[in-house]
Image (cartoon, rainbow, N blue to C red; front, top):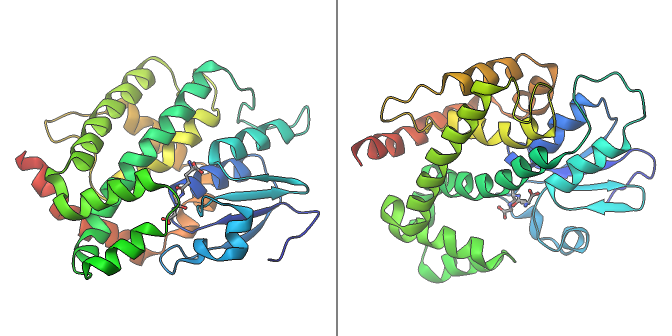
Length: 266
Ligand SMILES: N[C@@H](CCC(=O)N[C@@H](CS)C(=O)NCC(=O)O)C(=O)O
């Protein structure tokens, strides 16, 4: 692995939501970084070299001299703590309980988004694999709860426990986000903070898949105002759009549409 001792190295993948969280904060704080892109579909997260850095075989991994971090929330907090005093950023780098709460929500949001992404993009392909091949594929991941969730999505689709829990979570979190943003400009109050960037990539993935839970006519107008505001920032282009080709966005749209149709019928 090609580690540079001076410039921090981020192992990430282009469209991974957890990588986006970190890239957004890197861009907001103008941190100079070196990227190593892993192709998760090709299984590059499972190589022995990478697993020596990150035994969870997941992205992101961030190496800053002798510090190696393998959780997106930890990396975001490390970045916020490393920023020089008096830096002129619109991102508030303080961490308080409200911000920590949104970071915890982001971990739960990730599970739900992972289930829904698998349902829309990968289920059909996985369902067609011979059972032993599917088992080997799922068995590679060290996170056995995750493997079980994905197996449930593959076997049972929208009627499985994993999908119904994800949908329920999605509805709740959208109402929670919208209610908070109806009171405050940003998730943790009146200043932009790590909370906003911990949540934004998940909202965007759901939007790309056309799975925003507005099936019963919900407007989520405060949430939409917040998304529009964050999309205007330079960080959004640098950390999200630069890593999503038109093809990826089209795939989300086309493959998310039938799932949306099914959800509207529930
Ligand atoms: N809690 C971790 C989750 C990391 C994670 O699961 N990342 C996904 C991409 S968003 C991944 O690497 N998946 C590996 C795989 O699909 O095998 C974090 O927030 O950093």
